[in-house]
Amino acid sequence: MRPESAGDGSTDSLLAAAAAALRVERDALVGALLGQLPVAVAVLDGELRWRYLNPPFQQVTGVSPTAVPGRPVEDPDRALPRVLADGRPRSGTFAGRPADFRRLEVDGAPVGLLAVLPGGAGTHRAELERVRARFALLEAGSERIGTTLDPDTTCAELAAFTVPGSADLALVDVLPLDTPDTGDTATATTTPGSARTLPRLRRAATACGKELPDLPDRPDPLATVPPGGPAVRHRPGSVAARALAEGRPVAANLLSAEELAALVPDRAALSACRAAGVDCLLAVPLIARGRPLGVLTLGRAHGSSLGFTDEDTELLAALAGRAALTLDHARRYARSQNTALELQRALLAEPGNPHPNLELASRYLPSGITSVVGGDWYETVRLPFGRTLLAMGDVMGHGVEAAVDMSNYRSTLRYVAAMDLPPHRILRQLDTLIAEQENARPATCVLALADPARSRWTLASAGHLPPALLTPHATELIAVPTGPPLGTGVGGYEQTTMELRTDHALLLYTDGLVERRGEDIDASLARLSALRLPAGGALGSGSAPGFPPGSSLDSLLDATLAALAPEDAEDDIALLVARVRHRTSPS
Image 1 (cartoon, rainbow, N blue to C red):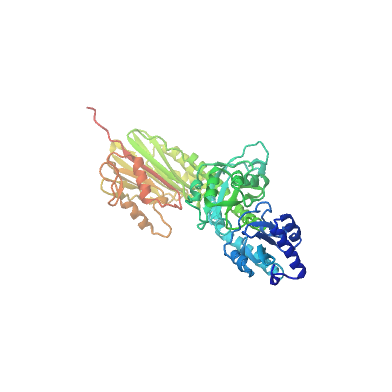
Image 2: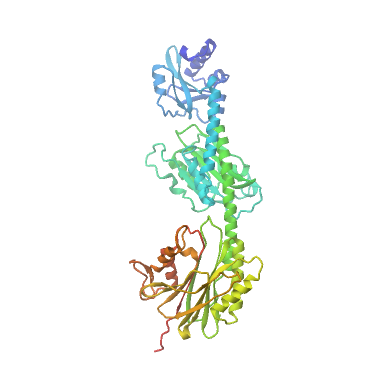
């Protein structure tokens, strides 16, 4: 080795001896000579292939000494051939870190290279910089992962954050929401050698770096692992299965094709890894409050680095731990949301059967994931003489309590409607009964009494938005006298009547259909007024073609929602539409 690259005479002699041993391919002697050095060094032969890594180098890079002998070295800076050719020491990037390169010589002839990772006086500063970078990464992860309470969005943010900064490929697999909360990782997976079957996980998110090594005819790595696809069962012994079973990260670096096939989670993931050129894997369990939620599997492509180091593993485990807590919050919220929604759907069963002379259709759409369940409700009550009472209401507030109050309003309405009172008196009685109940929430409500025998609608409102009459040529908002919401005990309700025709449909709805944040209610209702119902009962909007004649009320509601409902509704939407069945005379 050239004198300028040596620190002292003894080191020169040591490196000269190592060079001589390298020339005659005595790798064991090379290891014996260089293994005692305190700095991280690696030896390459004259063809720039790995020959030896000393223990400090293995510790810093995380590379196994048995994984690299004879393997070509990736050289992103193209510095190694120049050092080998002219013997001038150079600095560059090696194994993802700054390194110094020096030529090994015997009698002036090059036999290989020595790569030295920095140490000495600069080590402390470099360590401080790594600590700073670590905290910066974790801080950035806290800001970019968990921006919503949607579990899938959180998983997608985690995958996107790790690529390309920490990996070239990322897969996030999660356990089902209904997995028992035992707090024991063993119940969610299996230990190595166990006969228990691994559970199926759901692939919630994937990400792949845009700049991967050039591979001939490389397919899209994510084509086989789309998020939201079929459930996957991780192979026992894979890095992901081991990480879940052991509750700790599992890394495997510089894998052969056979090793990669044995260690990836599943067949689809293997195709993705092969397409991305992955040869290093790291699986990190997502654990929150002692309970496994899933696993993050990362892959690094051949040439992007030597592999996942202990430092990488520690950092990514910390990142995954924070992400798991965020994911746990989202999953807990989703469970409570699902519970409330199931309760509401159970309470908001199909409305009662109307008389055969009246056709009905209804819809209920819960709000987006960022809102809690509301108290929208509807009901129909069959009355004597061919009449049917329609009701649409909205309990103030959200959550399970609002859903329970909604059920109370429905049952109370059925009780009062059985008295066969006119709509405005039904509202008065409802208001009195609800006001007497402690902690009952107020609610808006609109009633519409259909009397086909008299061709008449009778309507009354307790603070609710006006019904819409869908006619062959226009949509008309019906001016109904509006009293105070139910449950206030104020009373003072009036009613109005209008003609009931076979070519008209009456639409009752809640405010989620039309209202928008920051928008005047008149502008909101104007959108509803713009809907058109062409002759034959088909609904359109503006100049858009409607449905063919004779279309169902379900199609009418579908078109109404398509025209008016926002993509991310902030409030629940309930719809109830009715029209008189067209009677045909017997021939």
